[in-house]
Image (tube, rainbow, N blue to C red; front, top):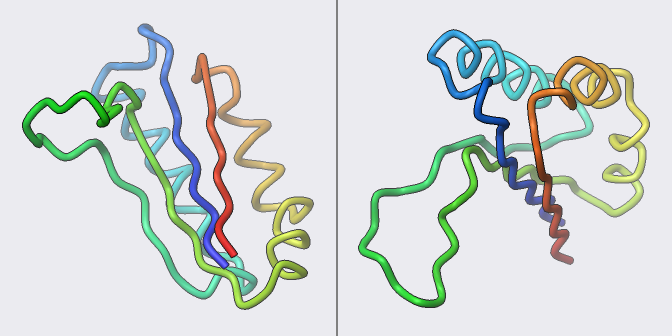
Length: 99
C-alpha cells in the first residue's frame, strides 16, 4: 500500500535552516524496516492548471507491504518522534492512503 502525506509549513519555518532540520526529520521516517521504500519531495515547478494544488511545502510517499505494517508504523517510535519533534512546524497536514 502507499501512504502519502502533504505538509504546509508555517511562515517562520520557511528558512533554509528550518527546512534542513525538517528534511532530516523526513529522512528519519524511512529508517524503519516497516517501510519498503518511498521518498520525500517538494512541489515540481509545473505550469499552473486548475486541478493542481501545489501550495504544500513537502510531501512524502511511503510504501508498505500491507495495511498491518502501515498501522504498525503509525505507532512506531520513529513516527511518533517525527510528529513530536515537528508538529510545531506545520499549519496543515493532509494524508491519503492507497490500497
